[in-house]
Picture 1 (cartoon, rainbow, N blue to C red):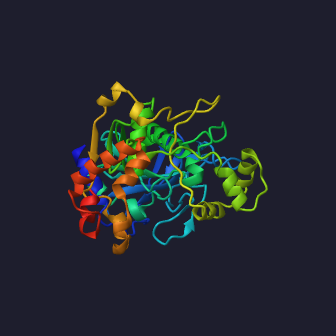
Picture 2 (cartoon, rainbow, N blue to C red):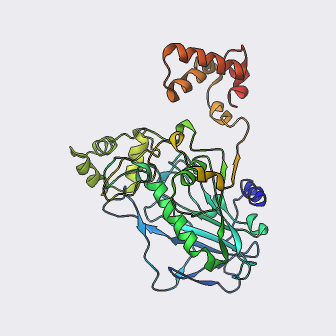
Picture 3 (cartoon, rainbow, N blue to C red):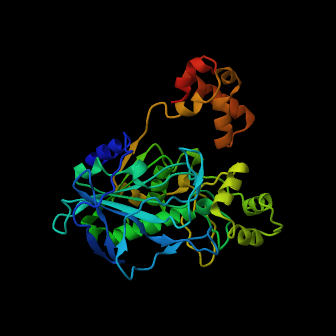
Length: 390
């Protein structure tokens, strides 16, 4: 596990490069879902299988649970990892994406074989449940292939498509996490065909990706992985979940000019709207989407059944867990605040008030204790922002 953690850290340091090539014979793998043809890497001794569809989104209800992708009748050419789920991507701040995005990428060192099955690292990207994608542009294989590890990445739905929670059979909530679960099942069932050891699967994620890793650890009833790595996030983070706003469909539909008066009418209208237009409306209204606790709904799979703080699951101790974080993790968010505005923010008080149910007297008392722990008797200012960011 230590080698896997070391290797994944290397991915974070410069992964923007061209890998795609057709050198040598393109490998064809016979899997349980049909034959899949990949590519030979040009910057190392490995093969890559890109953009394998593992699930499909229901076109009449793109906000609901996805379904397993049918088996391939012919050889599937796994050559393209460019699909991105609908979002405002973080690099150019442009709206991109398609609902045909539930794809898996697999990178396999040439040393892998049925007689030498390799451990598998499955990585879930972060992005506050609103942004992110699994392509090589960010999460490429170059360094990991040298560690004799099979790397798997995949897309899952984000924003309104992945985390709208309405407590209804059509949109029960946590659809993005249920996409992840379908991907994990696909990997568990098919990775041996690629030379992977299905009994040595490490599930890894960063930020909100790490939080969803923790959700799978807490709530999954199936053994889909064997150990986990959580980078800069756990399910106990206060912002990991939100109380769902069941009026979101009406807010969005009204913003887009619909006269819908019920949730079902609004959802039917939104299902016809281009993902780009819907993501733009989500951004314009400043809507946020998070995982939620799901209610009991007939004929609906419930994943998160209670808040993480209430979960008591003794079997968690049987799964090796590696946690990591960075010092001054919040410093980046402070950098965008003008120096003159620092004296006007009540950082400690606001966070405590948002995440804890305290009366006024308790709130002020706890605020003084925590503020003193971090910055002593100093006032909040630019001079102490690095200490506040711990």
